[in-house]
Image (cartoon, rainbow, N blue to C red; front, side, top):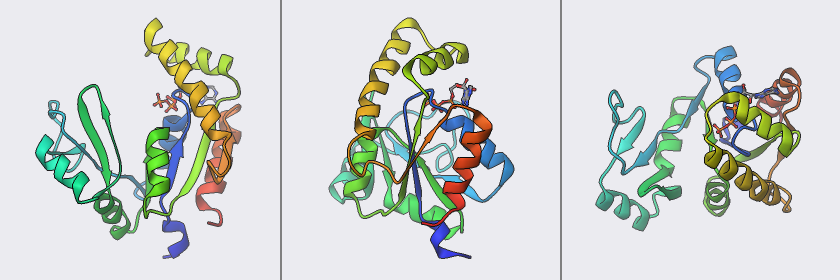
Length: 191
Ligand SMILES: Nc1ncnc2c1ncn2[C@@H]1O[C@H](COP(=O)(O)OP(=O)(O)OP(=O)(O)O)[C@@H](O)[C@H]1O
């Protein structure tokens, strides 16, 4: 196997910019070649969620110990629950010979940049905030409040993306076929 293409890939971009859509196409076209990393969380499992598949479910104490032992590449708290990506979880994906994809938000990206992981960063940008708003509306997943929150966050994410060395490559997701072609070029291209 070509070692170079096993370098992990960090995907980031505003909610609604198309990350899941592009990943779904990729996983569909290349089954078994890519994998998400299994994260750790302190939240309770939902029905059907398996330990080690959806997440590694751990207690708050276990999570805190992992932070102290510097086992996480990035971690964060959302709605009172902790979530983190461990170095070991990334290594587990690599051991399986799969390309590891991390789909994370910008605070995670900042932490990854300070970690010993040396991934490639890809920024998925919407063509404009107006188009982003339309796509989030047509996805039908948002309340008025969550839409506003996502759009406000998108402004911060775009500002972050405009800082030097924020990403290795950027895709403006206007036409999906074109964006997907660029996505594959990045993934399979030179590191
Ligand atoms: N190029 C495109 N043209 C038109 N619609 C698109 C395009 N790319 C994605 N979409 C649509 O935009 C919506 C948002 O895309 P998607 O859910 O993939 O975004 P996301 O970045 O994964 O968001 P989140 O971070 O919230 O998971 C979806 O309804 C998707 O079908």
